[in-house]
Image (cartoon, rainbow, N blue to C red; front, side):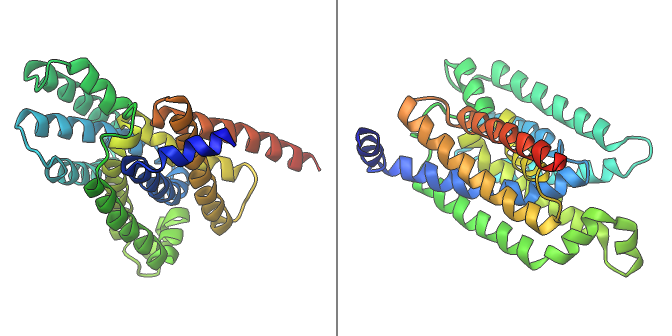
Length: 281
């Protein structure tokens, strides 16, 4: 009972409730997008865009822009569109395009923060941005409501365009053949992914966002075969892992992002074992 009492005491603080809401919503959106990105073999777009978001945050910090979302969101979305275009270029393959933009943005962002330091603790600022906050105090009610609105838009867009996303995921050539503009839906997927990554930065950190996209989808695919079943299971896995990770982070004062990813890794291990056992039967 002491654990439940301790949790009850923690949840009396608004910033803990904000973190829980943000974590659950971000995990759900990441899981929905993750299935499509993994199946399209484009899962590392999340990693690349997270580094771009870090570079954009550095630019906003250098220029002293208080509402850094005004800088981070458009730059990350523009980079998602650029990655999509470069990935379709015969001279620059998708993985090479992601590597170029990812490493370049990360290096430029770190360089800017060191050349134009906005605080005396540059290493701490960079570590917090890359790996997420070690506590929840940085999340405000504004952050939470922005996340709620954006997450609802992502979920509604995914549900509304589900059939088109399904078609684009499995066979783009057939999709084009029946008159559907596959490029438009690829652009939608990339843009929504960029938005989710920007929202996830404060809680999970730039370097760990890709894990929220990849691990739940891979875990679900270890056991299930149907696309719809994998999407639903991935959402449940992601939300559950985030809830457990956040609770463990609260109780043991561990970094929220890293704890959530550790739980995702454990879940992947469990589902891999279940998948191996069911295949033998």
